[in-house]
Image (tube, rainbow, N blue to C red; front, side, top):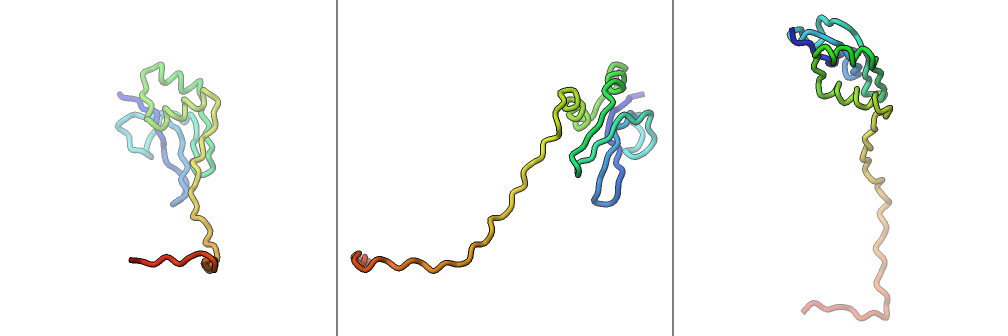
Length: 111
């Protein structure tokens, strides 16, 4: 039996929240699981993991998914999730008229 530590999706449509669970690798994503060891909410940038239980299952040979491994690594280091900066469009400035050329400057003629 291949045991995995992975995310189990919960929450509403377009409002995801995940539980970190220990499950048999053959069971469906949101199906049967062995133990719930934490939670991960990407919308509110919160995550909680029972590191003692995670270490127990990893010691028993469980394989953590890539995302769960990153969450456990951050929890061990005591680091909060990083918030990716959002790029907003610069506000449209009111159209300013072009400044006229000074009168004493010679006009350039195209040859």
